[in-house]
Image 1 (spheres, rainbow, N blue to C red):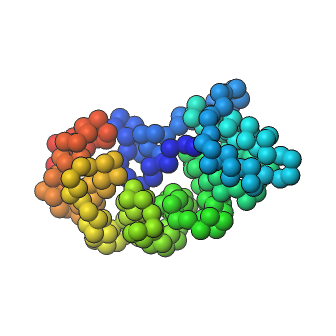
Image 2: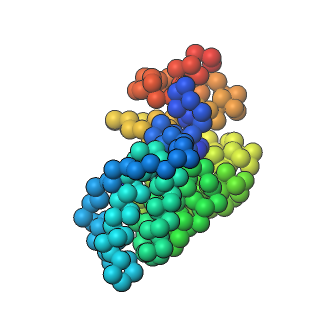
Length: 246
């Protein structure tokens, strides 16, 4: 399966544009369809595909989906989406396929289609793990209130820490979209921001918090958080430059 994307909300990769799947974003594909190596699928995914495939279509579904993932991993989003749509028509209720297709559309910045697929994934699976990505689609479609509602559905104890942090980041972005900068800052400050070992989701939260503090004119605090990001991974974002400017 593709790596879960970093959201549009958050630090742009150093030297690059503000990203949706940021540092892990697949490159925009050419219009020429290429043959890519099929990806290896876990036993769990294969079982889910086999269980949801139309009668007699399980084997072809596994093959098509593995090729879709291979295309995604190679950065060929057009081919990944084409194959993902084929897989969807073979297994309409496969959460694996719907989640994949939603993420592929998200990487391609096709927000409406991504929202459709990820909403279906959310409805069928009952899981909120992709709510931050879905919420970010609604932010891109200028619907910050809906984005905020989706982020509020992600609660401690039911999702991985990285998902909780991403929900806070996207939720803060939605609040900022509505001009509620202080509320956005407060949302991030409720997170555990001083872990013993910082992971990437901590760095993303630090960066966004620093950016919001700078927008509020709280430059000393903003510089401290930019410096914290730079100290852990100076190559991840433009935090060193942002700190120097403050």
